[in-house]
Length: 294
Length: 279
Image (cartoon, rainbow over all chains, first blue to last red; front, side, top):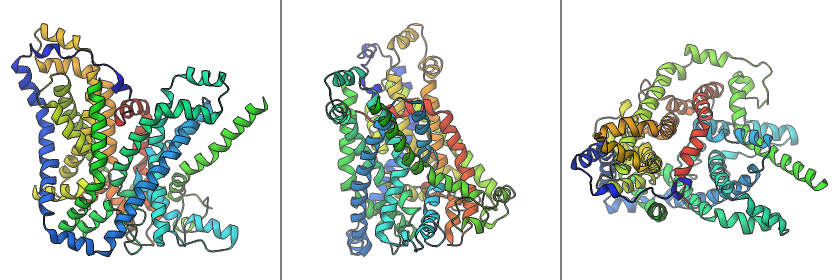
């Protein structure tokens, strides 16, 4: 945000005097990235789309009973998990902007899920929910004398826990973003509101929300894009099971790869494009808008 | 006055669930790594006899899943460092060319890079896997390095370009009047001024590569070429897997990035979040 708001220092006066050798060096220096892009983005994507050109792959995909379930799971995951995460992040960012020394320490610990790699933590969550040996059912048994639910072997609970895992992992990052948004609001606005006798809710509604609304919305869109590519939270927790009922598009594509059905994997991605492209279009537009505004 | 105490009590009350939520899965890793298998599988909240035996098994590679532990952690380190260095090289050159040399087509390249950044990583993985197969790079450490550089550099270029746009133009002017070549400007003026952003971006790329699971899982398969992240994934092949060893190895794997993250937290937060989301 702050990087964007700054005005550009000068609108290109050196352009006219630019010597060709500077242009040549520019081309040489930009070439490594262009090569990376051509070899590892453009060629793979083009080749992948070429592999996905046969209509029969799509017929086969639509006839696969787990495909429809996967699409529903994905939509559910994107809408519920991301929005829930952002409501939590909005609420927590309010908590963490209180100026107390101990809250600073809480925030340091709160960032741990983000700082630690996901493989060990997701496996840890997975074993906590193990029906026979996991700590959660063991605590339930000690407290009530009853056997706990068969958590990850139930498709509904399994997918919900994958969402919880996703939220657990990425909540600190987005909370941090919203905290930075809240800290950018001038304190005088809150003081003025206090003088006018505004309640906490009124301060949020008339001061906080109008200032961070744009940030909140564009963060939500960006998080939706990232969440579409969240393979770990589902795959490492449930593996797509039981009976392939908890897949999302990201894990389904990889499942086809493991079954050596590359055309199906690519067809899955092509079917995901209607979800991805509008979100990407929105992000590109808002980024280039902020880039030209400077 | 009473209202103020109520407010403090309410804040404290909120901190308890926040801490439990954040720390429980991580405590659970720690608990398992100091437990014997029997104790870990009993659902106890603290082991009767805490032990460091799991770490000694890891150190001496004394388990089927751990036979190649040292090679695998070396692979992780090698790949992470290579990705960090290559991403920095590629991205700083590109950002310099786009932002300072105003190379023709620079804007298009920036947009293509941003577009890449917005492709969900798990979707790009599939065509990338096929392409690496065509290049004959599968099961070669370089395949993962190049894939991770591809994933890390768009964001790296974006952040470095943002930082670079803020440098005053007068520096370039002065250098040009003194007859500096573009390379001298890059090496003597640009790079020293960009150090803080470069540290943030290098760390970002390094951690991204160290933490990556999916791409390693697809691109590498031989037990002596895989990274530690992929090796951890192999542990869960069976239901009675040695989870206590998995968690101990996971702890060893998680400590370096967490330490780096906390050491560079200031850089990371200010350097990266400003580029991550635009308002």
